[in-house]
Length: 376
Picture 1 (cartoon, one colour):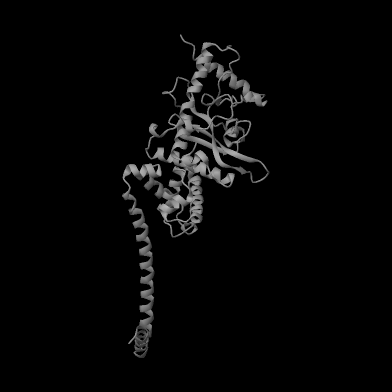
Picture 2 (picture 1 turned 90 degrees about the vertical axis):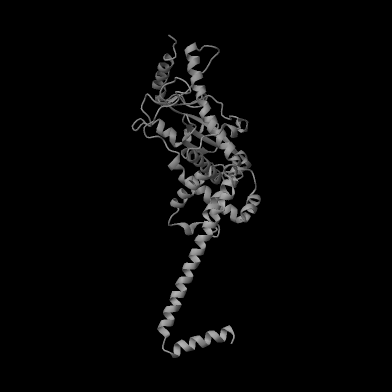
């Protein structure tokens, strides 16, 4: 008796014996068990894929994915929790979440093409683009959790110099684009993105703003600027401040150097200026760490400015995330030569925007800071 005839015989047997309801129940149970088996198999496959990670030695894992294994495991938990309940919105469902994250980290950490990285993960180029966009958008959405202004505005910098009241340093870095990208409205094309960042003494980002470059500092287009000039709800108390170079405006909460007009500065002014310049180091260190760890930023290949902004935001989130996981910035990986040259060297006063109500009080505060550099 062949298999089909056997099935017909067994079905007629159950019906003849009046066991139709029991047969229906048995079919329902079998179907449920089958569904559970499928689910268990999917879970087991996910676990098997994750369990394959230990094949990397710890140093190999960090070299490949730019973070320690323990940090990745924490990142996996964070992203998994963030998308809980919306897993069905993930692109390319057959690729597990660990694989998606590792695939994206591999792309960010080097200059390999989507095809090259896809070959290692058995992911097609088209699927890889979808995964990369989804994961970087997830990282960027998490950025406010890891890049945020400290609530108590703690002062730092005792290891840098004796300039008091410094919360952090503001600086700007240009992210080169592989090919010029046209703005969505208009006809201008841009070959770089401007990353403005406030860093603390540990080179941790406190605030970031990504925009298209301009002849003036992009601070004026950022939310941070609005917070710095808000007198009703000030960002910091008057005795605290950021420091920045002369391309930034002098504000109550933003101290800048004095302009040297042919040797007119006193020794106190020179020492004050030097103290401001020394604060550039944490920002340069943060930018160097970002560009060295995520080498894709050295020639960012994106089709839109929006995607470029998302990718840069994602790397800033990962920078702070790894610091929060206890991973220090390693001097061995830093390559300061890869940092793009500073494009904006224009003194802020040359923009013609110095006639503000904020200027007089800020100048008085700066003069008082200079007085602290008088050698007794």
